[in-house]
Amino acid sequence: MTYPEAIQFLYGLRLFGAKFGLENTFQLAALAGNPHEKLRFIHVAGTNGKGSTCAMLESIYRAAGLRVGLFTSPHLVSFRERIQVNRQLISESDVVRLAVKLQPLLPQFSSDHHPTFFEFVTVMALKFFAEQACELVIWETGLGGRLDATNIVTPLASVITNIALDHQQWLGDTLGAIAAEKAGIIKPGVPVLTTTDHPEALAVIEKIAREKNAPLTLVAADVNPPQTTGVPAMVSRGTATLGLAGDHQKVNAALAWATVERLQPQLPVTAETIREGLASVNWPGRLQRIERPEGRVMLLDGAHNAAGARALRAALEKDFAGIRPLLIFGALADKKWLEICEILAPVAAKVFTVPVASERTAAAGDLAAAFRTANPQLEAVAAANLAAALSACQYESYIVVTGSLYLVGEALERLGWSPAGAGERGLNEWTAPKTWQ
Image (tube, rainbow, N blue to C red; front, top):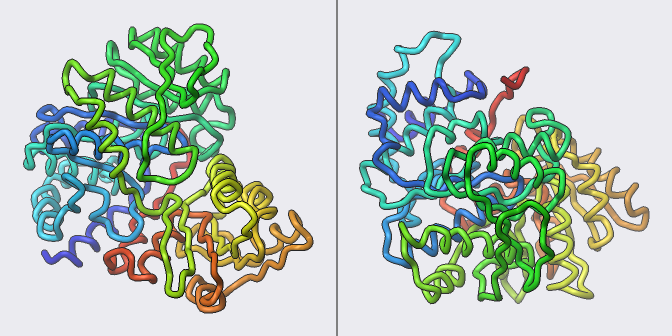
């Protein structure tokens, strides 16, 4: 098997869609020797900020000298981004080797219980991290938490970034319902930390933590956060230099810092090392600034829901006050793109809407119409694709590409800022289940 053949094999697993539940993953992991039992994890769930918080935790523990595995999704360009050790992408040869090793296990499953792409990749990552003798794995959920394939592990700590409306068709249409799915990663007696501050969502997390006797810490970025009724502990962190832009990253940094403090007995790390890790963290596609020739600036941000769009708008208004960017915007049709357009329309000088390279893309014409409705004075033009939009605005001094991580990934590849993925962005596509188990 060659690497392109391994990628095609993984593409084939997408035909099995997404069957939420843990039975398949437990069984496949057992057939692979239960590699997760040899590892230590920090499990991270939440609506926004999961990847950034994971990157911060990884950077801190790597700065402390540990060998750290990192499992995240989706990837921006290359499938190999999903599985990293000390921020080195898994090699093509290791992808091939693990695919060859695990593929013969699949016939032991019936056709109606065949492992999905994400279940297979989850076990592939576990196998690789065990082989690499990782001392800690930063482990991001895929979708939800309770029934997500990553939930077969028992971590040192369960981390929930926040709760906002996203993926309602699968996770529920209220913050309480979504919180119940995210809080499904909470394990008996395992400490849980969260930045969730919405009363409805927090009440659910608190209830589940209490039922499982899991010590709960609420983390706030404020210097003097308000006390929240019923929460056993409230932690606040002072300022630190962050490698990621945006005030919203301060909340993620506070969560990462509090998690490291909570785990000091098992994984001691000095405050100086924590600050070093936060200052050096790198996480592409999140307010990522790229300097173009002649001083032109391009900002890439994967804001794909209303909460992410509000964070992006706040960053634009604060960090680029008085400067209105040209926006290149694309979104998936199953996102609340009307609301996102309403949030971003007031801060844009002009908008090019584009289709996202995804089977689920929203039509560029519909996106342009939404921007014009939100701001009738705004010039919004539907472009044929990202390449056409980039060509049309190549001399603009300030460009923001946003609306979808898929679009950000395509931009990084086109701009030569990320290793070519040979069409691997399509592996992010999946077919959702008709019912939630």
